[in-house]
Image (cartoon, rainbow, N blue to C red; front, side):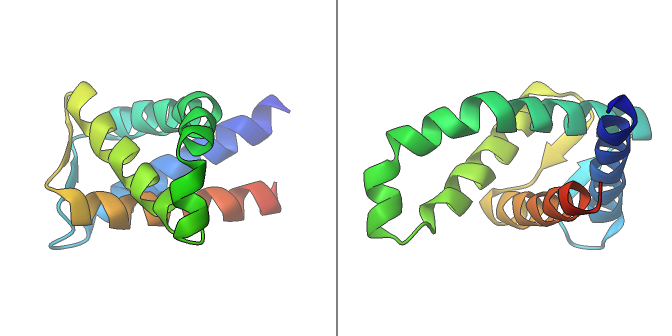
Length: 113
């Protein structure tokens, strides 16, 4: 069980490092240590804050057919960059792209392990 969690965290950290090395992405990660910290906190936010925000914004999600959840994820990703030194997101669009990529990688890691 613990090995699966570690593999998922390392997968998210690798995705963050790949995003930061992509030219023009607007996401910078200073080191692999910072990427691992961001991956852990992203997972904790996904388990605690995101469900609460999902319930609070349920009417908007219903009206937009669930597309508002992308906005919530992007805002959480952008908010995460304000708390961690060495991790920077240049704006909302890079935050949206980063959150979508991390969500896809997280989904793949969850299905694979």
